[in-house]
Length: 297
Image: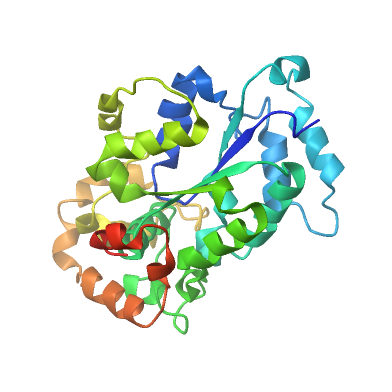
C-alpha cells in the first residue's frame, strides 16, 4: 500500500535552508502534498521512531503503523505524490552522522520506491555555519577544538558528515541515480530560478514560483563576529548543554557591547582551511563538479 503513491524525501543536509522549505515553500504549494514530520498530531511519532529507535527493536510494520495512524488513507491515496522533509534524516552532524546509513536504510525499507533530494553546501561554509549552530545550542569549545579530534569530546571533527560523495554514492547504489537529485545550496543563493527549475522538473510539477519568498529569512543565526561573545556567555548561562547554570543569556544583553573587547578572536578561515586540507572529501566525484567547484567544493 505504501508504494502506491510517489514519495519524495528531502534528506537535508543541515544548514541548507531546510527550515525555509518546511515552513515557506512546500506548505504553500499543494502540488507537493507536503506532510510535516515534526507535527506531534500527525507524523511526530513516526519521525522519532525512524530517527531514534534502537536497532534491536525497530520493526518495519511498526514504522508503517506510526506513519498511518493519524492520516486519512483514502485521501492520501488520491494524491499524486507525498513530500517529506527532515534534515536529521541525513544524520546528526555533531555526532559524526553515526546514524546516517541506518536512517536511510529504514526509509528505503518503509518507502521502497521513494525518490530522494539531497542539498549540499561546500564543506568550508558548512563547517563555520555548523559551529554557529553548536554555539547557539550552548557549546563552549573554541573553533580550533571543535575541529580537533584529540582536544574535544565532539565527534563532528571526525568528518563523516562532510563526506558528501560517500553518502550520495551509497544512496544511488541502492535506489539508482535517477531516484536521487543532488542540489547545491549555493545555486539557491546565486541562481534561485535555476535551483527551483530543477526541483519542479524532478517532481514533475509546473507552476510559477515567487522568488521574493527567499527574502523572508528562516532560522537566522548570528554572525561570525559574535561567536566568541556567545561562547563566553555559554560558560555560565543556561543552554541545552548546561541547563543548570543560573543566568539567562537573554537577560545579560548589557554586556554585549563590553565583553568582545576582552576576548581573543580566532582566525576561523585559517583554522577551517587547515582542517579541510587534511581530509580528502572526493568532491571531484560529485555530480556537475566542473560547474560547482567555483563554489569551493
